[in-house]
Structures are given as C-alpha cells and as structure tokens.
Image 1 (cartoon, rainbow, N blue to C red):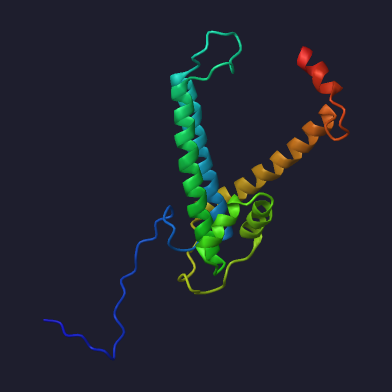
Image 2 (cartoon, one colour):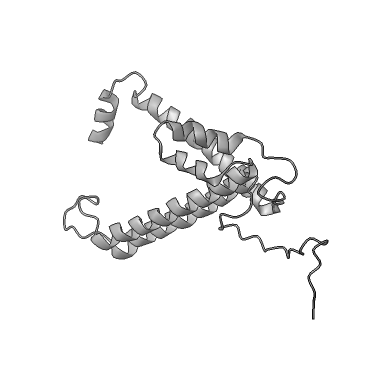
Amino acid sequence: MTTYDASQPPSITPVADHPLSPRGRFARLAYLAWYLVISLIIGVVAVLGIAIFGNSASSTDPYAGIGTASILVMAVAYIIFFYYAFVLTIRRLHDLNQSGWLSLLMLVPLVNVIFMLYVTFAPGTRGSNNFGPPRPNKGWEGVLGVIYIILAVLGIVGLIVMMTMLGGMSGDMSNLANMAKY
C-alpha cells in the first residue's frame, strides 16, 4: 500500500507528444513542416475526390459542374485542414508562451496576415515556459520546414513574375485577354 507524502511533489509521468494535439509546443521549423504535411495530405484528398467523383456536367467546360460528391469531399477536406491549422497555430503560440485563444485572430481579416507573420517568424521561448519544455525538432521536420520556406519564396516570386508578365501590376489586362485567345 502506498502512502501519500505531502512533502514530496507528485510524480508526473511524461505524456507522449502527439504532433496533431493542441497540447505542447512547436518551434518554427516544426510548425512549418507540419503545415506542409497537412497541406499536402488535404490537397491530395481534394484532388482524389475530384478525380474519383468527377465532373457531373456533360459540358465541354471542365469546370462547368463539379459533382456534388466532389464538392462534399473538398468541403470535408477543408474543414479538416482548418481544424489542424488551428491546432498547429495553438502549439506555435504555446512555444511563444501565449494562449492558444489568440489563434482566433486567424479569423479577423487583415489582422490575420500580421498575426500569421508573427507566429511564423517570432522566436520561441528558450527553455521551459507555461506550456512545458521545448519540444525537440525531429530531423525530417527541419528538412520539411526549409522546403516549405523555399516553396513559399518560389511561390511569391512566381506570382510576382506572372503578374508582371500579364500586365497586372500596371492594371493593363489586355495581355490577359490576348493570352485567353490561344
């Protein structure tokens, strides 16, 4: 029979870290890596939903009528992505020693852009904080985090190049109309 000794703190058994749980912390690269993983999985599910359930329209326009089942699959995939975006952001906020409730700022237009830049680039708390000790990054998380950064930079550069080539920066949309003819 064990007796309780009030002079000794209770022993706490460490809980296994589950990355898709809102409990715990995520450093910057782990946050970006898991964002990339979730984005890829949800993207594949959405594409497969469209490929499997196909197009319900008999028109020659491929976007004329995406089937109801495809829309439902994409909606479910989006809801799942939205949930995990909050989970990952909560863990990142915990690394910054902030409450997970701040993740609701993702819902406020314009504020969400500044908030997500803060969450992505702000350095986490060194050592333990109110949400526990820092979670060590796994090697593959660092690699995927760097890949995410590279893809983001390439995407921004590609968007700028595309907008420039189409004349979108000057407001001239005649190039876009000419390209649509071909």
